[in-house]
Length: 460
Image (cartoon, rainbow, N blue to C red):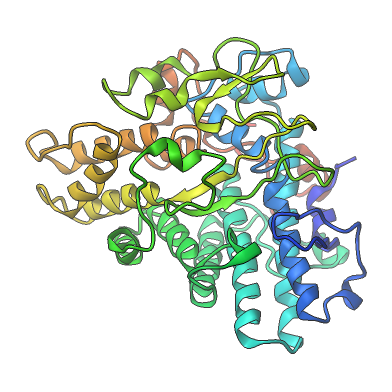
């Protein structure tokens, strides 16, 4: 059914039609040439781009599996469920035909194509200038986030920046990683300039200028462009627009969505008939899915540890981590939003970048790191404890694990710091070196059938 995911998303456009931003269910498929005529059309189209992020093959489920279960935070204890698709990912034995990977790849390109269609068409339409800049910024943000996830998961991927035809899709190649990151940076710089700082009413939860700036800083840290990361994140880290909530558990409460710590979350809404909820993240009825080394890493009295404890869900045989607990609706879904980027993440990225630019005893990097630690009820670090640049780097990466557990950051932190193989070994699983990236879905390899321009990743 999904043999040619990239071909399909290269020329198929979907949009959303509901009145509320949260209601992102797409229309079946309007005629592209006739659809993009009014500001309302573009509002619906942008909602459709957000809808791709909400998919069960992205932040609604599978993306979190292929990132977090891959790390040393989460275990899959069920080799029989779903033909072992997720278990194989967790154990580093997935084949190139794994359909979870295929579907996530396709979903990411669906979001990219929906964004491309908006950016291709919007300049020709007359509408309020600020609104046009916002719609463009939202599309650029979603496209950048999608490519950021693609390049970190697969390395070289096709860089498609216009809504291509079927003929054009046949010529796609796996572009260089540096070119993909350049496109991501360009999109986020433009998005930060075009997006508003805040929204009101039903628009609350859309991408903001702060979200674009924060994501750009994260991209720079990933690329090891630390000077740029510092200059990009400085105002966010030291400003008052975003704040650490006094109680960390409140950040994830389903009754406290859109709180001051969240720069960007993928929105969900449980119940009803429009399918905007999701299944429980990391829910299980077989064993404890939390890797023991994660809980063991928390110091005594750390307020973040209880968020990793599994709690039963009423009317369900499953238990879920307290961080993502929500009661099932009558339609057996839940409505937690997924935190893609929050202020604690920004502070830790800023601390890391500052330290990489130049270690300074008890300087601003220490202050940023310790703001996160002390909020969790943990004693602040001193320069006597972290006396070198390397010691500080190790501490901040560990802090990211504790603070951002189950939020799909740990795997990427291990990869960019070159510590994945050693960290996975602690869990008792052997990780081959080449599996720092996933295999290109075999369906894509078969369609393009060109070992020069569209090769499989080494080792697969």
